[in-house]
Image: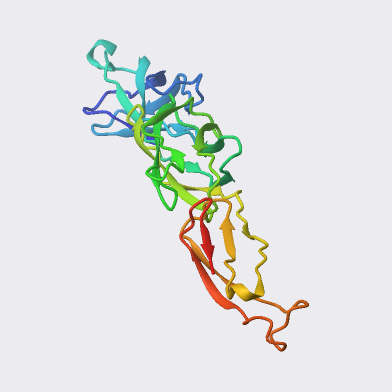
Length: 283
């Protein structure tokens, strides 16, 4: 950054003046810039003459507010004119404009519905001066709170110190049940960033998958019947709930009784189950 110092009127014999920086919101201790200490400028004394000094900010990746430094003059040394007639009290403000950014990302994750809570991780890619807080929320997908698939999260606050690569976590609580269903999903998003005028990108979302870990079985009861009775009732039983229901085909295979010997009429029939635990269908 080039800083320009201007002499408004002619000065007989010229002059020298030293330039120095003074911390503002930008500081040497935070390595925001390279200090200037008593850098001497030489003026020949021409009206409107300018001299420049170069100011060097320090490149970093930290997201921070624009910061300022003051530059001032001292040690005036006129060569011929009266020093009392030369005003060097003016100062300049140098603004270091932030050009960094930071973003939060949420990793997709999955877990069994009857296992432990599912841990969701939020990661900060670059440092953020002063830290910040962010709220996380869940939204129904194929997994819904209405169907008691999981416990919703509304505006749970995560606090970040602002360190590069920092992670914060929270948990999703799936509901343990015995219903056979497809793997189901919900979405996690972020909102309500609270920071010191710094804009962290929080648009990322994550998909949380709740894996089905249940099973169901259809069993058929053994049955016997006197051949003179004419019919026998065969019952198929579903032992656990199945989301959405299903159909299954029932068929017979010859044993010592055969259709060729006219012992029975062959069975080829479809059973339709609504999917209720303990449900029976019969032929």
